[in-house]
Image (tube, rainbow, N blue to C red; front, side):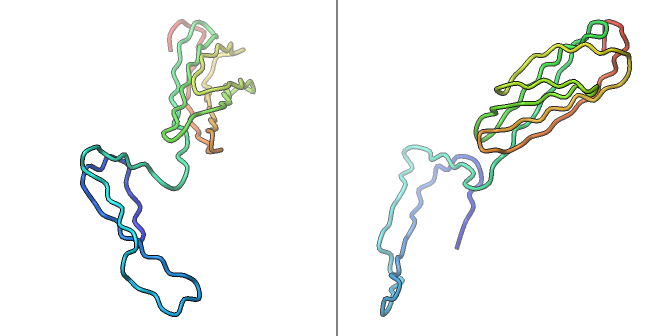
Length: 141
């Protein structure tokens, strides 16, 4: 039986029985040949064992006239974000190394723009996030 552990901490004592069968053997036994045990003394951290979790994106704005300061964070739950592409929604982009950036961009005209962020992690997982902003030429969002 195959069990996929959930993410968390296991603090119980458990025993795992392992039986080996040699290819071409005349007969096999179901008797365990190894019995490793984990003591309750220290918690065992169980981490997701398969699949890559993609980066999660957070986007924040601060505006002054047509200039928008965009702060972007990309968090990768099982690794690190190594690269981000920020698309400002008007044809301009910014390429950023790492998982955090603050980038200023000046829009040519008022309007609603969608800022999109694509983040790539160290296992080639891709996360995507977007947020719309109204640029009016005033001092607030």
